[in-house]
Structures are given as structure tokens and as C-alpha cells.
Image (cartoon, rainbow, N blue to C red; front, side, top):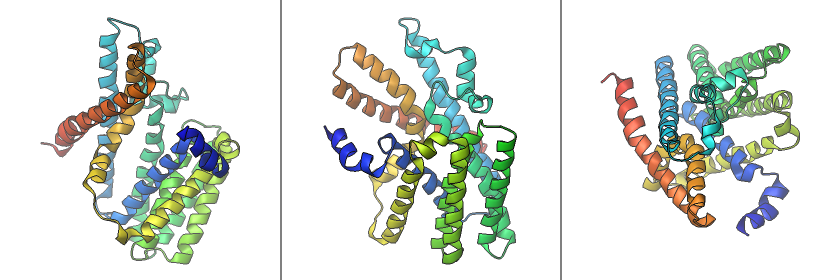
Amino acid sequence: MIKKAVDFFFSNPLFIIQDFGAFGVSLFFLISGFLFAWKGQYEHLTKKTCRRLLKIYLSLIAAFLGFWLCQAICWNFQETYWQQFTIRQWLESITLVGYLTGNGEVINGSTWFLVPLFFFYIVSAFYAAFSRRLFCKGGGMWIIEGFLAALFYTLDRMHIYAPTNMMIFVYMPLAGVILAEIYHEKNIALGNGLVLLLVNYMAMVFYFKKFQYEFYAENLYLISFLYAVLFVVICLTWEKRFTANKYVDFLCSISLSVYLLHMTWGGFLMQAFTEMGIPFTAAFIFTVFLIFGIACFHTKYIENGILKRLLSGN
């Protein structure tokens, strides 16, 4: 009943798709880009970027391997949904190679966001390099916009659609960068920044039509993105009214682990609880609590434990 009410009053009339999922993804990318520029730590950025990419990638592999090990144990006693996938499909999913070959993601569909995120980290490193050498940071962003337009045009002419259809999401974190540069000591003048935001959005619309036509014409992803921009601007305007919150900080600390784990473990646990005859609502609540527990374990012992020591050289 709650979902029907939300759909009737909000989702359907406002064209908010995927039960606010597109809005959430847009917010994630916007905040990622905003924080990159807001911190403004452009020194030694190449090294920092490589370390960040490697940490996320290794965390992804560890999350996949942990789930595969659980499934391998279960297969000795009972068949599960994930038993149908071949070794090649598991390897393509674990390594993200499936997005490059065009086979996509068949095991953990939520990992697609890493493709544009990794691409953004690479682009942001170039932006930082341009910004250090130019008097106006807006000039660096114009160079990036031109580069992306040329790159996507070339990929379109070459009919390379995988993983280009995910790389175009890079425009979302770039909008976050522009917002941060406008707010952060006016590194980009307001007029120039607004023009950049408009050009960035128009470029995203154009390439969504080319590479993600469904999200352009049917599921209006681009509208959810505008809501996300408006939400971020409102929060920035009221920034001084917010205070630090330990619960929010905790959720932030485990957010990556939750995202990497929720689809695989969520599906598996829901299936297991359903087969036990547990009512759906109770099964859902149990699953949510267990996913948070698994995410806490992954964050503490994998991300902040093994991987942190490995990448720090200790």
C-alpha cells in the first residue's frame, strides 16, 4: 500500500523511475564528483587515483570471491540460482571484463556503476593536471568537455557500444565537479559555471540518446538526474544547518560494501528464507540486517584491514 501511494503521488507524475533507484545513482555520481573537487587535493593525484582504483577493484574481487565460495559450499547440498553460470561468466563478472566484451553482468548487475566511476577517476586526474596549469579552472573543464565529445563521437562512428553505454554516465560526476568549483571559493565564475552545467547536461542528453535510448525516451533517467542536482543545490544552500551525525558517518563507511554485496547476498538470503517458509516481510527484514552485518565484516576486515595494509605497503 505504501509503494502504491508513493507511485501515485510522486513516482508516476514526476517520472521518477526505478523506485527512486535512478535518483539514488545520480546522487552517488554527483556527490563523488563534488567531493573530488571540494577537497581540491590535486597534488600527487595520479598516485592517489591509482590507489583508489585498485582498492575498489580489489574490494570488488574479494566480495565476489566470498560469495562464490559460499555458493560452492551450498552446491554440495542443494542447487541454487547461481549454479547455472559458467566459469567464464563468473570470471567476467568478477573482473568486470564482461562489460568490455559486451556480455554485460549476469551475476551482480549492480557493479556496472564501477565502469563510469573508474572512467571518471581517470578523467578527473587529467582535469586536475589542466587546472594546475591554467589560470582558470573553467578552462580545464572546457578541455574535458571537448575531449569527451570527441571520444564519444569516435566510439559511435566505430560502433563501439560496450562499455560506452556506461561510460557516458561520467557526465554526472562531472556536474558534481562543476558545482563544487562554483561553490568552493568561486574557482569557476557563476556565469561560466552555469554555462558549463548546461553544456554538460546537453552533452549527456545527446549521448544518452545515442547509447542509452531507453533511458532517453522511455525510462526518463535524465529527469531523475535533474532532481538529484536540485537536491544537492538545496543541501549546499542549507549546509550550515546540518551537523555531523555518527550514524550517517557509519553508513557512509560501509556504503561501498553494501553496494557490492546487496544484490548477490540479498538474492541468495531471500531465496533461502523463502524456501524455509518464512513470510516475505520477515524474510526481507532478516535479509537487510544480515547484509549490513556482512558489509560491516567486509569493510572492517577486507577494505580497512587486508587491503589497507596491502596498499600502504605495511
